[in-house]
Length: 84
Image (cartoon, rainbow, N blue to C red; front, side, top):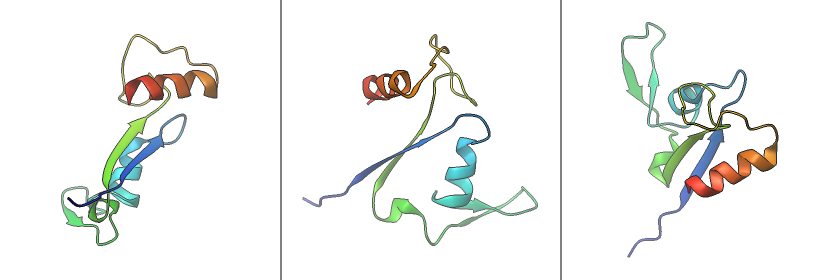
């Protein structure tokens, strides 16, 4: 069997939109400036690893759930732990 690493990319919070990371930095494709077409990102991380982009803390961006009151890194860490 092939050993393929898993990368968990934690992103989110004020001013850090998940799609920015997945569509402009290290995701499978990039969006053209016209916003109507895409191209394969030759440097995408999915070529060498399985990827999970995880919005955090709960309640930011398009994430949802009952817990929207994370106040510190310990609470965010606990949510991510139980998610994984």
